[in-house]
Figure 1 (cartoon, helix red, strand yellow):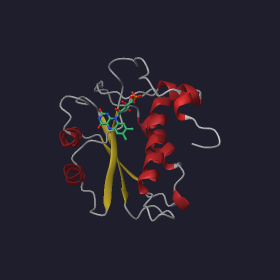
Figure 2 (cartoon, rainbow, N blue to C red):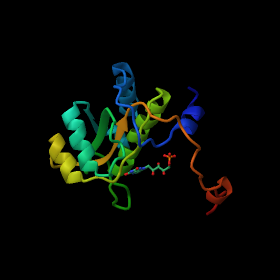
Figure 3 (cartoon, protein in one colour):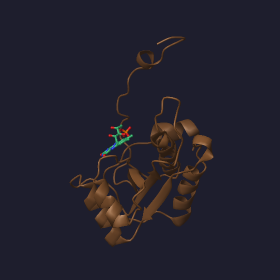
Figure 4 (tube, rainbow, N blue to C red):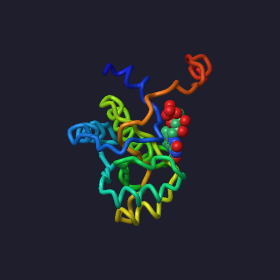
Length: 171
Ligand SMILES: Cc1cc2nc3c(=O)[nH]c(=O)nc-3n(C[C@H](O)[C@H](O)[C@H](O)COP(=O)(O)O)c2cc1C
């Protein structure tokens, strides 16, 4: 799929078929995240692939968004330590930026493979860490189900108009 088609086709899916995505597709998706750029190439993001039914259910439970994502066959959980990236000139830690870049590579690659995802930022981090045995220094910054969608994509949600968000030369 052409890059711009991938960007246009990506949607957040909240209902999944239980069918397991093919191993080669999953590997290509993780590989796309692995190749993402990071601060000084620090590559602090780790990915936890959860496919065992019992663990999938435990992650789903820790997300706690009612019936959303209920039949998802896989969850991919992204973690990074707060020291896993750089610090900018204002003294702000950049790990969240590195994480975002890597995870969006993953999400777009899944779209290119014809698979559905939904970036999830609202979950019980303590519960997720406990279920997955994540060491204390790591933060769970986001997760996504991975699978085939029940319904094909719908309309693109409205976005702010180009003219409203693009500024030339000065804000
Ligand atoms: C950082 C981030 C966190 C999100 N967290 C959630 C979430 O916890 N639950 C959910 O249903 N959707 C979540 N979403 C999906 C957004 O609601 C969705 O991307 C947005 O409404 C635009 O729709 P689209 O992704 O279908 O284009 C999240 C998206 C991002 C980028």
